[in-house]
Length: 67
Image 1 (cartoon, rainbow, N blue to C red):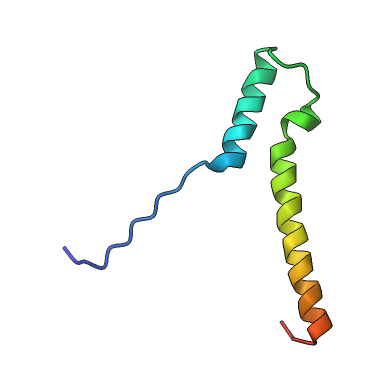
Image 2 (image 1 turned 90 degrees about the vertical axis):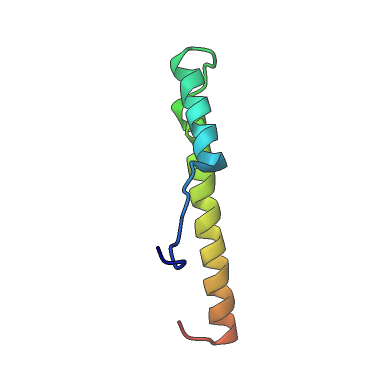
């Protein structure tokens, strides 16, 4: 066996876990939220990522750097 083996461990993450918890609570009628709020952790993560990318691109554009 070589010592160059790479092991990667994936996980569900906080946003995925929170989405599963909210979905489970909604489907078991523990909470009476709209599906928009139940799935909000996914949207919040998506919007945060898009905002970070937009800010980085804006800073690069202002400085005059090219992609």
